[in-house]
Length: 110
Length: 113
Image 1 (cartoon, helix red, strand yellow):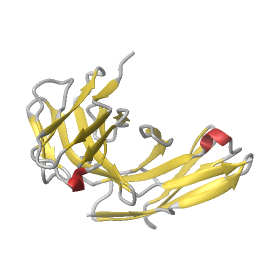
Image 2 (cartoon, rainbow over the protein chains, first blue to last red):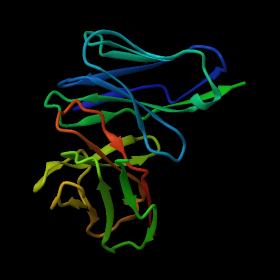
Image 3 (spheres, one colour):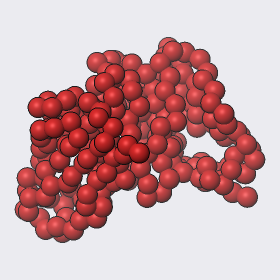
Image 4 (spheres, chains in turn green, blue):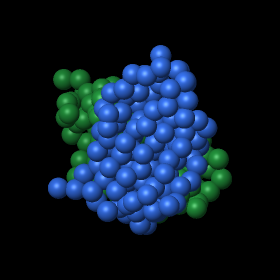
């Protein structure tokens, strides 16, 4: 099975940088996804990491360390619209199942 | 534009009734998934399908069934609704590769009284 942990809530200031951490313990692993979910809406894809290292995509970056079972999502130049839940999800070894963490609710304040 | 839709968006039903939630995608994706989302549990996989006539159980499949008779649709049936099945249900689809991004529908909020 898979166990995914991420903080429940975080608060940050507009214009700042925030890092959302995710740790996973899995019996098999085939990559780590991050999704963004605004309140009352569907999750939308942000990033996918399968190799160690940092992937940058505009204001958002995602990092993976397979040996440590650790990932983070880095959001730069925070905007009010970044207030949302951020879901970390691990893909199992067979590649047929995503296990999601409980999500981190990020509140961006002026 | 291709999309994934769910219906109904909101449903109230009574304990013991059979309920079917519809999911329809126009991307021609092979893979389709059903999740439920509850506070404190995140998204949990109920059932998934890799193509027509293929269905598989996920993490929380008890009390649910699916069928895949064509590429576009994966209806989710609650055989005998229970209050514990009150939740928000999301359908998702992805292309053939297992690492492909999943695209989620808008969700169905189901209340079982």
